[in-house]
Image (tube, rainbow, N blue to C red; front, side, top):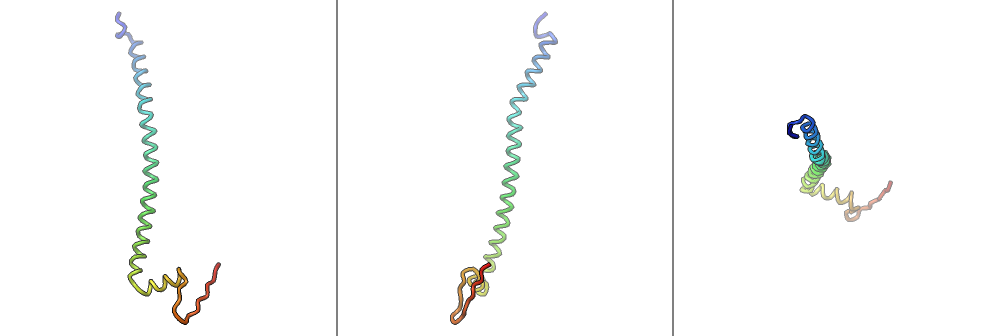
Length: 91
């Protein structure tokens, strides 16, 4: 009887093949999980960037008007007009 025709040989060969395939594909499965985690993090970052772009676009649109620029300068840089007294209240 030839050795490759025995049932025991094929059972061992299939088990070895399955074990090898498990170890080879195990790395790819872990890589897939890592990539999915990275994709989720990047998706959150994209949403944060889109929100920032929307805020900046609104600010840019408002900066086209002199009244807004004047109010912004007074509020953020404590600027004042001539003959005007400004009181700064801190929390």
